[in-house]
Amino acid sequence: MTAAISVTGLRKAYGDHTVLDGIDLHVPRGTVFSLLGANGAGKTTTVKILSTLVGADAGDIRVEGHDVTREPDAVRAAIGVTGQFSAVDKLLTGAENLRLMADLNQLPRGEGRERVTRLLERFDLTTAAGKPAGTYSGGMTRRLDLAMTLIGSPRVIFLDEPTTGLDPRSRREVWQIVRSLVAGGVTIFLTTQYLEEADELADRIAVLDGGRIVAEGTPGDLKRRIPGGHVRLGFADERRLSAALRVLGDATREDDSLALRVPSDGSLTALKTLIGRLDERAVEVGELSVHTPDLDDVFLALTDRKAASR
Image (cartoon, rainbow, N blue to C red):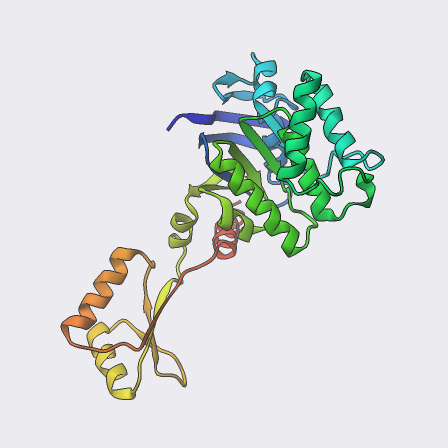
């Protein structure tokens, strides 16, 4: 799959402090790529470099095939950026904010007005279009901010902690917007403090710590790297539980319940093997559930290891 973003050997330091220490990234078109890291890990610096706002000290960095150093105007024409803090002018109405962006993008008047109308409809802002943006809720403000980003029809959008401060309902509204953008072929580069958000949206995730990428993969890949995954088997009576325990051997009984925990990475292959072993001995299982570490576990384990080695 063709890369929307390709980064090799990216380095950035401020004085003696190295923020990015030779990171590599490959983001296919039409996907969501999430960069995770603690505060100060370099997420926002990465976004600023990729969006031409800050220069890199070293590295080959391309967005939509354009070199960010030699072709910054081409990169800017291909991207949109929604930062942690809204770019909405609270004194202007929603429609006026969008029309201002259309003018800044130098769209012909008729095309610009038509695009504003479509975006107001798409983001469910038509009713509030004539009201000052300062009267909008947090979720409405973020929707307007995203609509303003889309005025220029970007092929790559950088979302830097886009749902910070939003309530759960508004956050999920933003998630749905992101999914619809990707379905339309847009590439999303997402940084977030909410690991659930990355789990919900990202096709691939990279964990940034100490200026380096310490892990990368799909959410499922990363979870399977962390110990603690297991399959929980529930049984109708003691006889069936004891029979399963004899078959499995490495299972652990849960206290005060007719259930066993079997270490597992939760993969389909592992589940088929487990069920096959029980079926061969005609052991009847009442309930089966898969428990894998979540991204919080992954993040803490990876960054704790890194911190311990420094």
